Image (cartoon, rainbow, N blue to C red; front, side, top):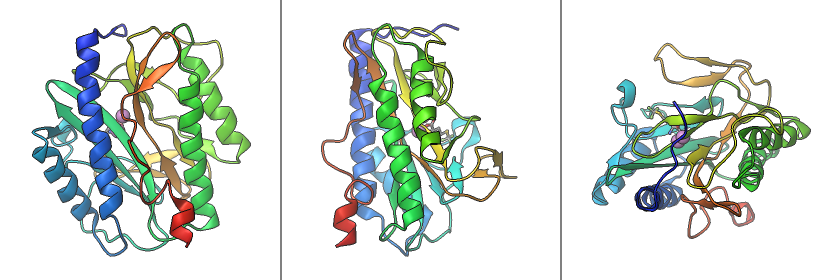
Length: 264
Ligand code: MF3
Ligand code: CO
Ligand code: CO
């Protein structure tokens, strides 16, 4: 199936749900601290989403049992909230997807619990900068492979690796739709980007090797070598000159975009 070009009305719909997801993620940054369970994060995201008159997209999606994904340390993605208590020194990716007015908006960030260590800071900062570099490639006429190549080149230059088994995706009336957005690959390859395409970029960056495995719960994805993994995600729409980040946050995230503050 080919990649949809969204109408102005559809883009506005995705913009609204994306803004909600971004605001919920900002709220997560405010409530995160050592000693809480991942279930407490789920409760917050669930209630905050419902309060907006929206629905958390993950809940019951292909059988996913909770309203948000919480992925701690060596968990790459799709962590299921539960009784796990987060502690100082951990990193946690919280991936919020909001369904409102018939459209999904999808965004995630990795947070430090307490002051970052040298290692946590390296993998988290690499993932964040990888997303920025991927986004910088987007404009009408560029290729999907340009995004992957920019991300892979940078991540590997930092001594980290890019996960191959999970990709970014088109989004709109469906949570996941074409195209698949690889976070590795060759410049000049892949489909041409066109104004009005809406998709996510969401590089998963490992401190060790790129190999991952799915746990027996059929969801939780971990690094095979047990190394740390970090991820950031935005939903974007392609424009003539570049792109609009639909999940842009109006302010910085507490717990990963204010490292200097954390160290005080
Ligand atoms: N939000 C994830 C993504 O970025 C997908 C989670 S699927 C779920 O694509 F079922 F685990 F929620
Ligand atoms: Co996504
Ligand atoms: Co997501």
